[in-house]
Amino acid sequence: MRRRAFSLVEVLVALTILMVLGGALATFLVRAFQLWSYGIGRTRELVPLESVALALERDFAAAAGGLGFTGTEARCSFTTLVPVPQGAVRLVAAEYTFSSGSAVRDYRESQLAAGSRERYAPLPALRLRYGAGNLPPEEWLTEWESATNSPTRLLLESRDGKLCRLLLRRTP
Image 1 (cartoon, helix red, strand yellow):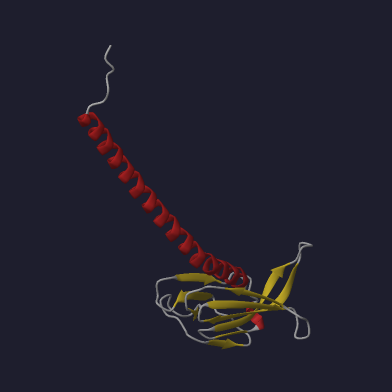
Image 2 (cartoon, one colour):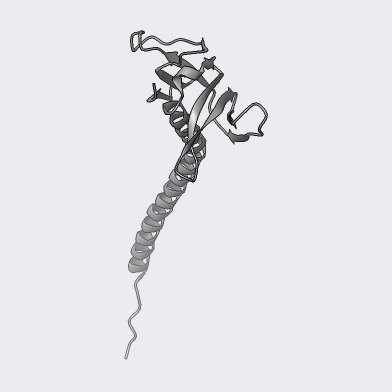
């Protein structure tokens, strides 16, 4: 009895199909790894930015308007309400400083007490803009200094203009 084997044509067809499927799988895996690397890079870029924006948004929303506010494109300082574990709030001086590639938030309860400091990095170059209630919505100031008044809105934006976040003060 004669054993049947695969012919040369059948082997070549099978190898061709295998190579096409292998090439498609390799292309898919390379693209998947490229997208994964891009996602990791964007996450590392945006997480510090989102963190500092949320912290500034929370502090600015609770800013005590009558206790003074000073600010430039690179720094702002104001008094805000911060919740404490017992369910109450306390007044603290908050200062945000933006430099190339990072931001720092300082909290201080009084001039004598030691405060806390948080650093956010890496960040794109950011700047601050200030808006008052009597200004049109599209008009922004680059500096603010008042012992008795705070801006009603704050714009945190990247210097290249690609990223921005509008923050509103919710306290009088």
